Length: 160
Image (cartoon, rainbow, N blue to C red; front, top):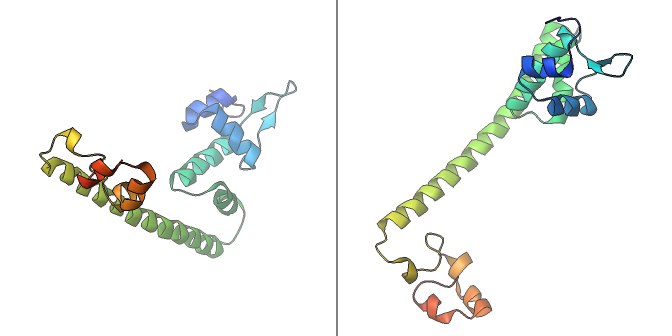
């Protein structure tokens, strides 16, 4: 494989992205591909490095805009201390978002586990309940009973 002139297919295979993703990153301004006389995209080793970095940043949860801000830090001739400081700030910001997402996922996990446990502990037949394990004020409350007219199910603990 000639590393000085790569086609989009070769780059996609080398980096582990599909060509559509590469075109998207180019449209977003994260990459500027060269062109042949017949207007085909061509890439070089620097483009491979850039795309690998974009892929890694996106995998870490960086948005396109965040990636646009961080990417130049790897290629500009900034002093090392300034580059490190700016990268630390970006990583801390992403870490805070990841921690928040982790807490939210933990809450979802616990709620799913609770509902699964609730289902596992019930010995009723399916016809005796409406929407277990999701019965609750939002699904089977009096407001829903009035709205749907399902009074008989609501008195048995159902309603939806």
